[in-house]
Image (cartoon, rainbow, N blue to C red; front, side):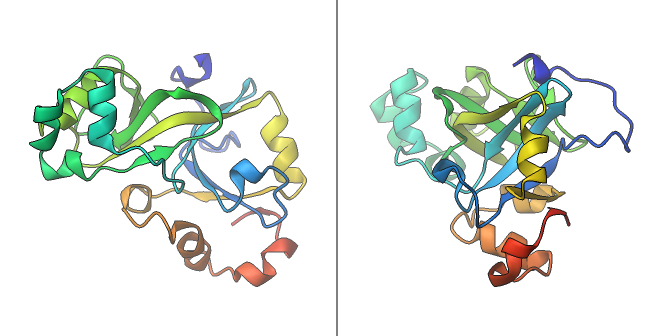
Length: 202
């Protein structure tokens, strides 16, 4: 996870931090079928991102109880923002590990900036803050993450596995998980029926 350490890059560096990866119809890996991945880090060393449109069966209050953040009685009295927060499948790697993508109005020492207005925090502090109603204005909770070795993601994009486009915080944090894939393509003016003929970036 060293790739998450902040690095200075030029705007024309070609790295995909703070962009969406959109799985193409010909995606060979079923774990990423119709997925939208938010890229948290990308460098010559590899890439790391969080799938944002796959739900976990676990509820956020149950996760808090399992982690010992709250007890069962406290879980019943969580503020609506915490009680209704979906838990997402962030990717196939280390699914026991939690990650929170969130707005930059909440920052602790362990928070890592991904963009000007999005941070990533992977410590239990943010879960305690959310459960107490003192967390960030916008948050996305995921278990697991997605990663690629050096040059792997570039090869997958070249092989027409992914479409890329700039990310927006509004789209990242909206709660419409089920339609996110189709809505993102539609916002790019792309008809999913013709997507197999598209390669590169939007």
